[in-house]
Amino acid sequence: MVAKGGLLEGKRGLIIGVANKRSIAWGIAQRANEAGAQLCLTYQNERLGENVRELAAELKNPHLQMMDVGSDSQIVMAFDEIRKKWGKIDFLVHSVAYAPRQALEGRFVDTSREDFRVAHDISAYSLAAVCHAAQPLMAEGGSIVTLSYLGAERVVPGYNVMGVAKASLEACVRYLASDLGPQGIRVNAISAGPIKTLAASAIPGIGSKLKAHRSHTPLQKDTDQLEVGDAGVFLLSDMGRGITGQTLYVDGGFSIMAG
Image 1 (cartoon, rainbow, N blue to C red):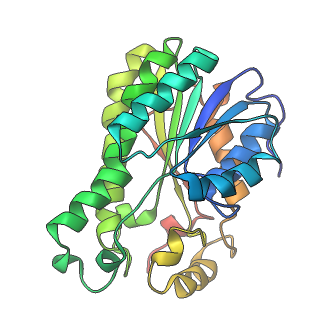
Image 2: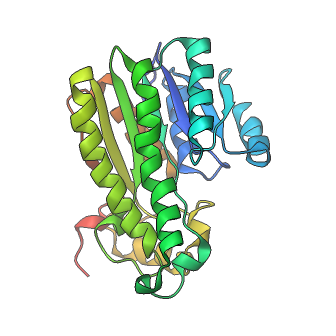
């Protein structure tokens, strides 16, 4: 099903986390573009910027901006550039997560202090950091959506510290929703089913996890990035105006099943 045209007509939004064509952020960008939004896509560094520039050619004249969410100074500079160009934004998509590869191997109990810090800094704190920077550009209200995963509430072998970081991310969503709600800014998360993205490829046994997802989900199918994109457009648009502080599952029903 294609996102309804016009839901984001006249709105401007920032999408953080497009790395390549398999990125969940790219699925949201495609659907937001179809829904009429004017987009700004960020990229972490020049190497990843090459991929983003190639993909951007498929969209309607997007703005491109380098921003590493692990750097406070880059966040400030990026949002300053967006303020100069647009004056305001209506929505923001945060689709960023990272943990050192060694932290996804073996047991969670063996996670080092530094690997724990890095995973939470990039995967959870960065949402608070970009919300803080975006708030002045959302004086008229807006919508912020981040991406989570079932590992935030259940043990997923091989997910380890990322599961704990995603639990932190979902808690951030609730606290940010409370802080920003009086300004008319909504903050929500989408918990997507497993998709073989660049980040997911670092998770041991991702192929078997995808197979298990297909066999246990009520819809008996993989999660598609464009399904997540459609849900993202809903939450970003005025159709989701009464929803904040929530985690919306887009996983074919996998999360409701026992065992």
